[in-house]
Length: 280
Ligand code: PAF
View (cartoon, rainbow, N blue to C red):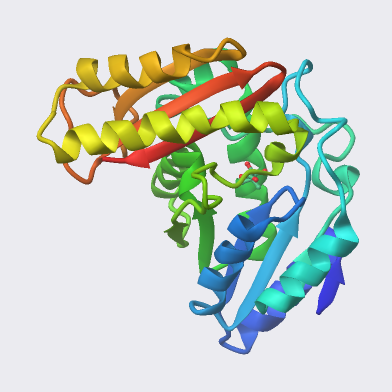
């Protein structure tokens, strides 16, 4: 396992692999790795000769009032998880390697990024697309793996890849859940035991929507109303959005498009912001 912290060394390493005709799989992360991230690494291992996991808590995707400073940083434990999952390289640059003094060029997807998360976090996806584009240029992957848990991020990145002609295959790995339904997230560790228990309403709301669709319901308004009702029964949960959207365009749907609709939820569980979604 190699740990690379400098952009130029990572670029040289990637060039060496390209010269040898080897393929590179990239798993971009912000660290604090859990089993969901490990499943992304496993997906990459089967698809590329060399798997690089980037670990970088990206300041550009946090708003000033968000949890950038308290976001968990635990490089040593993360490296061990990457190694055990079969990655060959961890790329963990310091912030000034990614955003040098005077940095002023951003990559901005200007359509899909505006809805859902984009409404209350207007600069979030600009930060994501900028850092992911940089990681693509630095690590030069043939394939990159992202989690379905961040469904809008997946749609925005796929659009960026198409619009900017990155020759990179985007693989989307399914959301992993705890046995009680809670989607794995690095932010779950902020939850107290009682908050965590109430947060289960999120997956319950999504599973109820799935059950309704399996029972023949197609109408978005009915699915959204029921999910919102389930979340509304919890005093400490504040709904940010519940929406049925097209998986590619993120545009709201009136009716379920089987296999191509995403029911997306974001809530505040007191001071912890949680998102989840399900494909319908
Ligand atoms: O999904 C994440 O952890 C981040 O948004 C990503 C893709 C690593 C970019 O910082």
